[in-house]
Image (cartoon, rainbow, N blue to C red; front, top):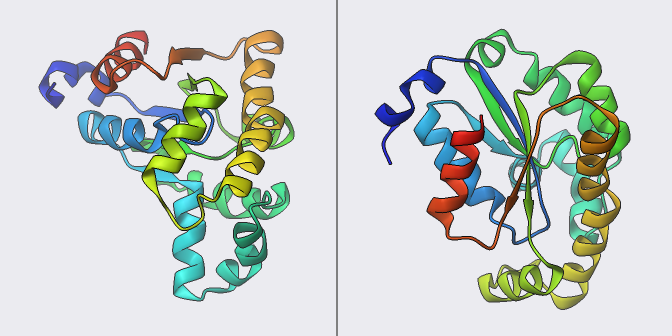
Length: 192
């Protein structure tokens, strides 16, 4: 799949928000779509891990939450992402975000200052998410933290996707995240 096949999409300012349980393939899809569409993508979790590694003020603020597997308060995440997403260059090019806005409340706040082209929800059963996370073997992928993350997904991102589907006219693309990676990418691109 080449960017030329999707040249008409690459000429648009596309803004995508990704939801899905941990291990659903959000990072893989956001990286692929970023390359195909020629727009920047970022993961809220990776931005926070990078800020912690850099020892920044924001990193120190979010460190206790990341290390304990609990959710960073919405106001803290919103403060960081609102400023970033409203940058005129991102508004012109578009963006792909994984991990923000994560709750119904933060989604409502986001919808007050920007509008996505689509919210993409990768649907994966909990057991498959557990297997994928254990297989990747990251230091923070302990069985206890995995369970916390899956539970948090149901309370936050899944609830936000349900809110979009049931209570807004916003575009929601729900994709079976257990399909082959190429198929998931194609479904998203052809649905845009």
